[in-house]
Amino acid sequence: MAARPNTLHPERSPEEWLGNEIRQWRTLRGLGQDELGDRAHLSGDLIGKMERGERRCLRHHTEALDVALDTGGALTRSLVLVYMRVDPRGGSDPAVTTTPSPSAGPLNVSVPVVVPTPVGPEPGATVRPGDVAHVRSAAAVLRSWDNLHGGGGLVRETAVAQLRWAEALTSAPCSGALRPELLTAVSRLASAAGAVLLDAGEFAEAGRRLRWATDLAEEAGDWSARAVSYNLRSRLATWCEHYDDGVTLAELGLVRSDRLSPAERAMLHNAAARGHARLGNRQAALTAIGRSDEAYAQLRAAEESRWMTYYDAAQHHGDTGHAVYDLALAGHTVDDALDRLRTAVDGHSQPFARSRTFSRTKLAGLLLVTGYPDAALPEAERAVVEVAQLRSHRASRDLQDLAKLALRYGQHTRLQGLRHQIAATVGE
Image (cartoon, rainbow, N blue to C red):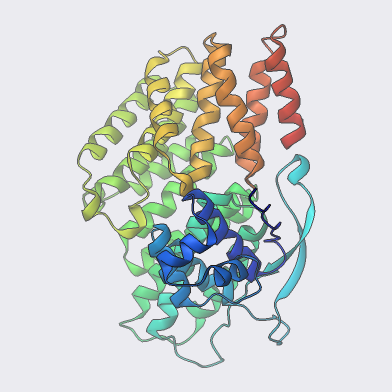
């Protein structure tokens, strides 16, 4: 009989957080510690110690594990943030704070969080290319954590710490040749952090950071970074029920669309479609979705920037599916929405767990609205399990909306049981 794995405590330290990530990837690939050690040319005992946070994980370890686990470099990117930390009071120990999660229900508890605050530039020190590379890595890691875990908890704390560091860099002396690269990198980081704050439910701060991301991108003359910031600003406005602003911001992002990649154009047309759909502008929403489909048809993954590699078939169908979902609730045909949402649910891989949950919850809701409660139930039950593994204000809100849709099936015992499950997971 296999030994029961030790309980990990990723909230206690960066070492244990990274160890938990290693175990999650190893489990996902169905490997034991010894088997993974053989593939990565490390001992199984060392793998176990790194997973438990008893042994510091070095870069050559993560690089070997990334190859063995086929993570796409996720563990090495995480290493940048995990060990870039310093006590803001001047010491070398991590700063430990107690922060409430924005999610409701059982996840809404105060837990000790180790805040990875990287060292800022010394007064008068000049920004170096390595600093810019660190900002880029920080932005990439934040995006991957946000997609996998949601924006609350440690991810939110990390985002805030990285923003403080990046602000200091933008005020430091920097050569004229390097400054545009610095501004673009910080814009990317500010957009990633703004997305985290949006998912954590901190809407005012998210808006402030995303506006800063736009300003930095425009100063750098980077149309791609500008488009990303406007996309997120549009989605924030739509989430906050400022639908006209959502459409306007998406259209501003599409200015000089000839300078944007197909994925960037599709992304912004989706943002406009969601605003139009919420406004009840059926034809405008369908037109925007059609333009997104046209842009996506032109997409060549190898030609997209590293920042847009996330925009694959699952992402496209999920984003367009959410807009068609809103139209379907208003009486538009549901078949297109169901097809798009199913494609998204089936296509999203584990690194995009939150996006998959968003689409699954919408799919379950649409099945409820259209009179298929038995088909909706397994998707809804799976969504509850997935949301419980996230720290996401938005995912929790979507699940609460799903519980309201289940009210119409008062005689359906399992659906009413589902409502109790949702309440236990995210609250009423």
